[in-house]
Image (cartoon, rainbow, N blue to C red; front, side, top):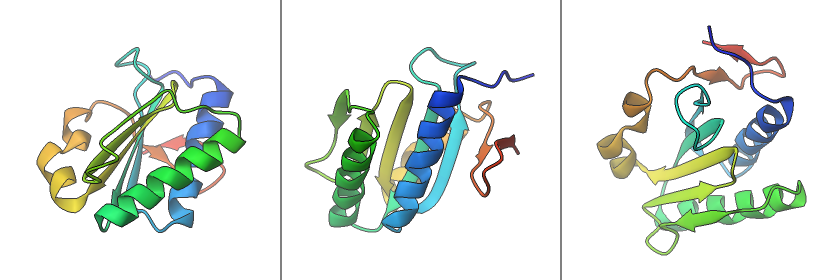
Length: 126
């Protein structure tokens, strides 16, 4: 059985998914990884269509989460724009271009993590 994590980190992760939608990020996956790693409570994985799109998604997420008083702790890959990793503490966001996402296949690597449904306000596992 997976324990539900702190409501604050869940709400931040769900906010981030809506911010990705705002900028037309593709194929979002939100994984609850807290029972598998101490690195974060959630991983958000999504795809951008180009280097510019990946960078735009990164910029927007950084801005909107900062407005929500969630500071960015670390970021990698922004300059190349192929795979950007953004560490917000309880939430780690991976923004890929398609080829990199397919190659690294984080969903397979973290396949034991419950997939969080973001289709409604309700927090459910699929």
